[in-house]
Amino acid sequence: MVDIHHHLLPGLDDGSRDLETSVAMARMAVEDGITHVVCTPHASSNWTFNPSLVAERLASLRDALARENIPLTLGSGCDFHLSYDNIQDATAHPTKYTINGHEYLLIELPDHGISPNLGNTLYDLRLAGMVPILTHPERNPTLQRNPALLEDWLRNGLLVQITTSSVLGQMGKQAEQMSRTLLTNRWVHFLATDAHNLEKRPPRMAAACEIVTKRHGSGYADLLCKENPKAVFEGRPLPEQEEPLNLYNDDELVGAPWWKRLLKRK
Image 1 (cartoon, rainbow, N blue to C red):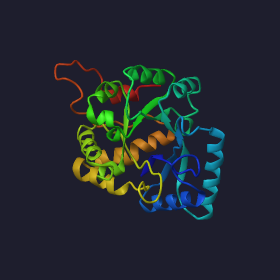
Image 2: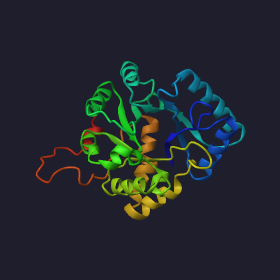
Image 3: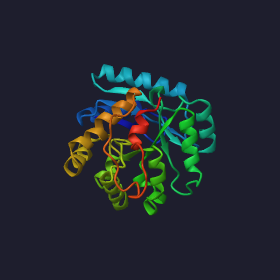
Image 4: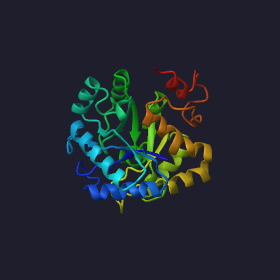
């Protein structure tokens, strides 16, 4: 399994507090069946994203994992908050915040006050060469109240990641219910841990992937836990996806499915 959202690097945000914790989290991830992790410190007003410091911490952690014989492949990205300054900087420097310097960008919405111009912002990011992946919409209070906001974004190619803990019911009933609906509709493209520590937010994917397998089939579970995140890690187009449900009106003329449009991008 490949985890594309993981606060593994020590001392950069509210994730791992030190190198020892990072090594323990990496060991736990490997024991759970995770082979690749994208280290995604916050890029926000509270935590400044410094690529040089990220690269330094990433190199130190790789060395520590090698010494401990922990077979985990690490990549880098960030948990990108959609502030005005961040958006301006990202459009000017498209690979600064993306996963492994390719085109995929994890984006996090504010809990409240989602801009009515968000669709335009997503378009601008795409125009600058980035492919936005919305993180944990099932945990966002605004989207919990109005999940229909997701529909236009999805129709225009937005990708969605939900949290494994939400699938397991550990993020509250609303998050669990919304994750079920999103999965049933095939509106989800990635499961990820959003791990922050060893206790409350641990780096575990296997149990959630098993739930998706039982409810929605092994093919969809493999897309969410293995194939799609591996493509993101390597900077490749996503493989063919399962067709989303309840996204288009019956009388709507729909051309190529959204995932075919996405696959044809350059």
